[in-house]
Length: 344
Image 1 (cartoon, rainbow, N blue to C red):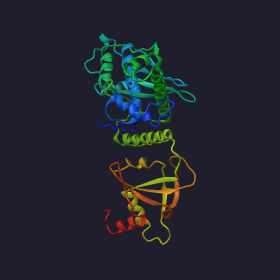
Image 2 (cartoon, rainbow, N blue to C red; image 1 turned 60 degrees about the vertical axis):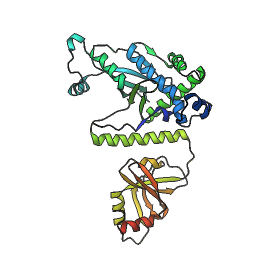
Image 3 (cartoon, rainbow, N blue to C red; image 1 turned 90 degrees about the horizontal axis):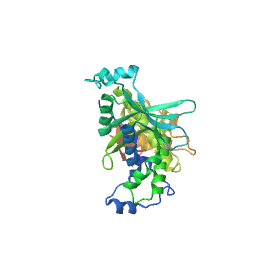
Image 4 (cartoon, one colour; image 1 turned 90 degrees about the vertical axis):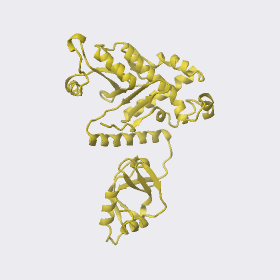
């Protein structure tokens, strides 16, 4: 089964548009320390990326839970696998060759917990690479991942500072707090997290639900990707420029042109969902035609427009396999190209 993970928020994306009060070091400072060119946000995320790897190793080695440094209850902890979930793991062959009686076997997984308005929510966390093997080796050998003790961010600041001594200890602490608070904000918003690190410390983790059905997986991917883009847009705090975007795939635009071919009045888009973020359309289908129109007031990241007249809509280009190509042709010229068969 091939799973798409690019809908998960990365450590680099957590540091999008980081305020200077968090860290006022310029890009040139990091270039001097690292010696090669990377994204500025990637430099800022390195201490957080390294710290999270230390936390996961600490949890597996000492069977502790990690409490997030946020204002509400949030923590990463182990959970016992029981019932239908245990049977699913058995069917996948994950417990083959284990002497259940001799090892006193009990299955576990890792989950992220946070307090909602009325009860505690949880999300599954999937480990990858060496950490996954360490976790499963412990489970298969009968290790009891019962957690009584907990660790907090303060327990890791000195260890992270030892790795990044070109920053002060206070700067490290502020950077880490910023990353964890944004991570908590994104998870509560409905985003998933995907962290991979092989340079500073080797680990990978995905926090968020996954499904086996390909159709459901695709739908979930689209929803999570939308949430990720909107959360990043909130952090960028770009003023609303008045543009909303509409995407039509080849079937939708063929149907639209066919229905309006003989219409004498202005063509009308019916039952469409405009979006503030243009990139949300790129992965919806192999080929998408993107239009835009202006409104005076921000109506949210998306909304239903029951009838939108084409004289208010501007054709801006097409996206093919997630790559957007702008165009200068008008909406009327696009219709003429369709009628002559150029887009068939």
